[in-house]
Image (tube, rainbow, N blue to C red; front, top):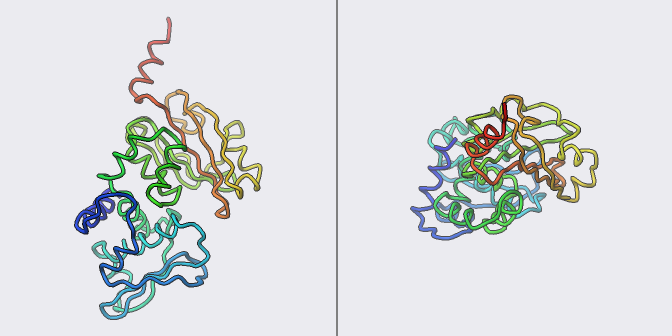
Length: 275
C-alpha cells in the first residue's frame, strides 16, 4: 500500500505544506469539499457525490481529534485515488459509507487508510521528527501529539518507517486483529501467521485483556517478550513490549521493539552460542 501513501505525500507537497501537523480540513477546503459532522450509524465517515461536487461527513460520536483527522484523510483518499470515485459511485451520484481504521479487508478501504497515513504523516516531514524521538510507545505518543493523528495510525506509520525491529499488533478480546512489521522484521517472520490467533497468557498484552477497565481507561503496561512468543517462524530474540488500551474501541495496541538492527541482534545471539 506504499503507492497510496506516496500519492498522498505528493498532494501534501503540491499544496505547500512544510511542517506538521497537516490539516485535512484545509486540504478539503482547497478542493471545495464541504465537511460536516453529523450523527452516523454503523460507520465513522462518508463521502458523498452529486454531479461533480463532493462532500464528507464524519461521525459526531468521535471524541478523538486524531481519529477525526484520520477519518477525513480516509475520505480524501476515496476522492483523490485513481479509480475510487468511479468504483464507489458507478451511477455518478450517491453516498459511500466507509470502513476506516484498518478494520476492513476491502482493497479500496485499505488503500484509503494508507492514503490517510501518508497524507497526515508524509515521510519527508515525519521521518525527521521520528528520528528525534525515543523508541516504542513513548515515541509514538509524542508523534501522534505532534501530527494530531490517532495513536493506531501513528503506530503503523512509525513501524513502516522504523530502521530498528518494530511490530505493531492490534488485538481485541485476547485475539489478534492484525499486525504490521517493520521492513527488517519482514525478513525473519510473517505477520499473517498470527492474525486471528489468541494472545498467549504469559505475554504482557494478555494482562490487558483480563481487565476491561484497563482497556477503557487507556492504561499502559511495559514488559518484554521473546519474538518467537508471537511469531513461530521468528528468531528467539528479546523485544520490549509496550501495551496500551484503546478506550471505547475495546482494543489493545501492542508495540514490540528493539534498539538494535535485526542483523546485529541475530549476530550477537549466534556469537553467544558455544560448542
